[in-house]
Image (cartoon, rainbow, N blue to C red):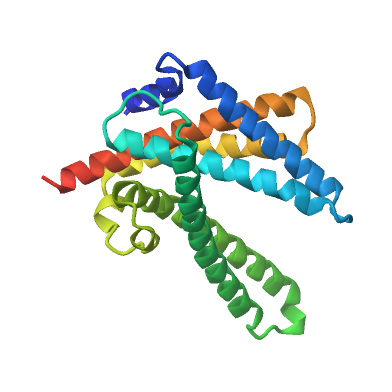
Amino acid sequence: MGVLLEEGLRYPFRGERSLDLFAIGGLLGISVSIAFQMTVAATSTLFAPLFVAPAVMAVIVLLGYLLRVFDSTLTGDDVPPGFRPLRGLCRDGLELLVLSAAYISVSAAIVLVTLVGLTRAPIDPTSAGFMGTLLFFGASTATLVLALAFGYVYPAGIGRLANGRRLRKAIDPRGQRPVLTHVGYFTAWVFALLLVVPGWAFLLTALSSATAFGVVAAFVTFYAHVVAARLIARGYQTATADLDR
């Protein structure tokens, strides 16, 4: 297990052009941060849409690269892929964006239905404080459980997308149970989670801080997500290989 994590942490530095890889990935992250901050600053003006477009394009390219990392891992490549050809990268990024939006929409709908169901429960005015606490606890627990479930099932959908390039099949979580219950997938997912959670913290810093630390955070965010993609792809690869035997 430790070998898997160590291999994942070293993965982005393999190959002869690792510096170019970090330069492109980090600069794309910085461009997203700048565009986001400019959009927030120009929210009350007509110029906000001008900054949204480049941010979305950079996000699509980054998502496409993460899918390419997943795909190259499944094909047995131990060296990080490049960003070219860019056209295919944008196509992959759009597919992953649609897949992500589908999973997020379903999760948000379930949370909304849960919240509506909780708020419709009859509340005794004499116990409003207790009921308010109970509703908050129930909503928080439901949201946490759903977030973990989403985070666990979603990478398997990415694996199916990378493996078969069928978006409709990747969105449907049915048939993924053998992968989701495989110990190799679970182990890789836990290791990837240890990288993604700090990566999101650095992402928030990069989006909100126009400082030198914000610039560094953009590069760290890129590194964390590339390693996480590599780890979860290795777990998905192990699970599917065992199932094919």
